[in-house]
Each structure stands twice: as structure tokens, then as C-alpha cells.
Length: 332
Image 1 (cartoon, one colour):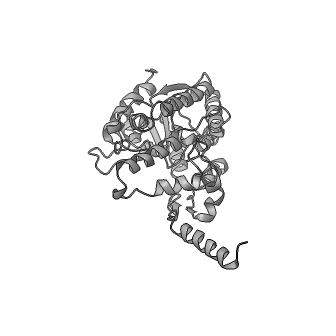
Image 2 (tube, rainbow, N blue to C red; image 1 turned 135 degrees about the vertical axis):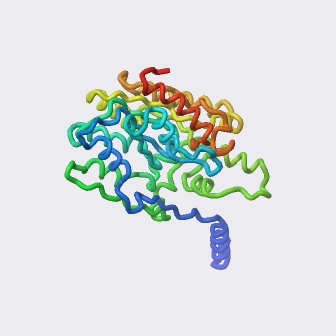
Image 3 (tube, rainbow, N blue to C red; image 1 turned 90 degrees about the horizontal axis):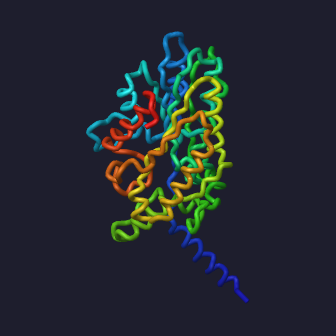
């Protein structure tokens, strides 16, 4: 029979063990930092007036606007595509962190009368990470205020700012208890802690490789089902755009597949390909889809062991060169 002292000792030992686990740093999603909501402002400026509207609307996530500090060419991908396509009069681009189809589905209805003009082509990246538990269900990236702003906007309205979201422990409590949805990866809180930390140099290369492997599997290793809400949103916006005479051109965002192959092997590569096949199978025939997920070598990203889709300037140049012909007429 355990004595009070034994129970107290065991409790103190568990509390000490918990205190040695580093807390997950608080994260802040900045909103629009007091400025008008950029996506809505870009739409109103480009398509809310009587002048000829830009032919192409390019919506994107962080892969479309992030640049590396070491880049010689500091233009984001959106700017590169715009420059090659003929400038602001030919293409409007608007991108934000964690933007994805559940947000973009609220853009298309604006062209049903609330905006005076509409594009002929809607260009969209399809980022497989957007369908993962790393992104889906993350309360910091729910974009609730952004979606509400698009749904509520009327032509007489000013475009207001988007408030910031503070990602404290309370906000993430439910999310962190969920399973990652990939075999042997554990709970989402463990993975958030892993993503926010860096292995000590003394831990060696093996620890760094193990960390990268877990992150890659978290980002791209979950089986994508046709019923996924974001996939349904993507298919729905494609169909609604087609009814308005807007051609959707979608491309699979380049992934660091060389690192994925090197660290995780054929199983992860097979899952990526299978998930992209699910995406393509759910899109209506009216939408053009081009698979560019394996376009780039690992040297084309911010660094060779990157577990996200952020491209260095060489990678952005290569991708832009593939995108522009898609919106100029062909599907090559």
C-alpha cells in the first residue's frame, strides 16, 4: 500500500519531468497589422472599378510571397509571374500566410455582382500541406475573420483591418490533444513543440535528420480523402468560377521531394503522388490542373533540408517560367 510520502514523491517526480519539457512558444498571427485586409483591398482595386480589369487573378499562400534573405532577386513569386505576364494591368496577385481554398471559395461570389469586373483566369497553387493536420484545424490559421470579411463585404463598404490572433496554450488546448493522423507521429502538441525547436548541435546529424523526417511526414504523409473540406472547397470554387466564365488554372506547389526521398524514402513519395491523384480526381473538368510538385531540386528551396515549400530565387524563376505559359493559353 502506498504511503502519503510515496505518492507525494511520485507526484513531485512527474511534475519535475513535465517542467523539463520546453513549453511551446506563444505564436501570433498578425492579421493585417492595422492595414485594410490586403486580399479584399487587392480585389476591390483590381476589379471594383469600370476600367478594363486585369485578365488574370493569382491567389496564393506563403510560397507565393516569401523570399530568402540571401536571394539576389528579392522579387516574390507573385511579382515574377506578374512581371512576365505583362504587369499589373494584366495580372493581379494577392497572397497571405495560410491562405487556402476554404478562404478562396469566398472570393468567387464577389464576381457575381458585388465587384464590377471579373478576371478571365483564376490562378491557384494547390499546396498539399494545406490538407495536413499541421495546417487544417490549426486555430491560429483558421482565417475566420478573413472569411467573414469576404462574405460580408458590399460595394459601399470600406475595407477594414483584420485583427491579430494570439496562439497561446488556451487557444491550442484542443488541437494539441489530437492525433497527427500519420502512423507513429504522436499528438499535434508534440509536433508543434518539435517544429518550434531546433536540435542541439551536440545531438548530432542523426537527431536533425530524425526531426526533419517527422516534419516531412507530418506535412505530406497523411492520406488525403475526397471528403476533405478543403478539397471540397477547391472543387466547389472551380465549378462556381466556371459558371461565371472564369477559367481556373491550378498547379501543384513544388515540394522538397529530394529531401523527402532522402530522409523518408519511397513510402512518403508514394503518398504524395497518391494524394495529388486524389486532388486531380476531384476537380471538375472545367479546371486545368498541372502537377509541378517535383519540379525543383532541393537546392531551389531556402535550404536543402527545408520541410516547407518556400523557394529561393532560382526556384521561383523556374516555377514562374512554367506558370506563365499556362495563363498565356497552353496547358504545357
